[in-house]
Length: 589
Ligand SMILES: *[C@@H]1O[C@H](CO)[C@@H](O)[C@H](O)[C@H]1NC(C)=O
Image 1 (tube, rainbow, N blue to C red):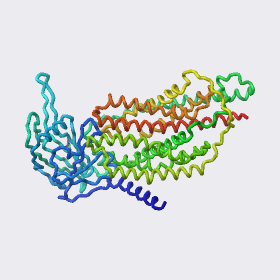
Image 2: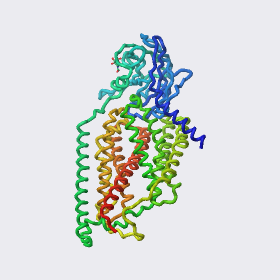
Image 3: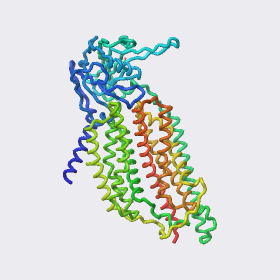
């Protein structure tokens, strides 16, 4: 126990150190060497298809010297190595030769293909990403159709500094005309050159994130449509208000009837839910699964809330994705105790007897599908030689994080949950013999409820989904986390109110199997999100190719699964609260 405690502590400390170390400022003296790292290359339209820069025959040194990276950078597909560019702080370079190469047949083809696929490259100078195109494609003219491939051979670096710190850097390729690669034969001689210009700026170091973001190489299409967001918020408030008003009126009516004519249960149509008071708290089948879903759902609710709060407090390095990945993984591991606690606590309340099985289910419910999808995606990435494939050290690190932190925390949470849980304390006694459930019209079936219960929460966030997808699957950096937090809150409240309404409708036709139904009817939002992702992939993005497709759909499926778990959990707890409330109030028996 002691050894594993130590291991837990160490991994947390290391991971947090890794998370924040990259934000330390570097100070330079004039003439100090500024290292230019080459990072990755890839097709412009496939954000998650990236390769190591030195896969292309572009001045590869004899001895490649890799930079050690943070976990977040590795997860983001970064693989940095030292380049041959020699830049010194505050000293301009007019034009200097980088290297001369004789391109062989295969290398020439590789470069031509890369330029055809609109490859861009990314360097990193003092933690600032610097991007440009490898070459230039010229297509034009109908007859004769020309198609020309050019390679940029000169890079001009602009670096801005304030005092002894670097504020901003970019690279332009157009200072010298490119070299045509059309119809040339190997061996083909190319000379690569570069130049550097330093400019003083008054921008402060603390504002450099903004400076870097504002002049991004990638186009900014994330104009925030305030109007549409306000529009959807108004709709949502109307919807929630509507549900609350209807429910209170209907219930008032129902309660009133109850006190007036106690024995006269003539209008069973409207009062169906009272009749089934001896069945409504009958525990559902597959308790362990049921509780595991609630456990993992609660865990993701905590993780998502935590990430959004951290992002709003500005804890992430905004011009690179990495730190969010790391924080998510850590939070997921740390919140495992919530999964164990909720799952086994609920299981105990439901008088389940295989709590070990329940805790194991809770720890595997997300981890197992994640592992399957990840292995598949990683194998494809590995086969393509992409830097999206994780190196084995990282895989072992992540495995250890789960084995020494995630899993033990689930078990510990589970033990507490089991020992602390009180009884279920149902307001009505459950009879031994279950009532027969009358058949219901089509609009009250599970399928109809799932469609309604999934579509409404989905439509509440559909406008914002574009931003979320564009952030996760594009180049855009979504920085208005405040709005995202509002959307998240809206999503949860819509889900809760819709599920309360649906549960009421279900009970009023004397169908008391609301437990699983509440999870599925709201969890089906995940299916709608997946349908949206199909639309996004084919109509709103320019992604293509096997690797990018596999990554997109693999991880999107997992995201939809998380939606299912989270919203199903919210829906169940909202319904439970509601049902307790109405049955406490009728005071039968
Ligand atoms: C690079 O930065 C300089 C200022 O340092 C600016 O004048 C120039 O337009 C930028 N070039 C590109 C391609 O963004």
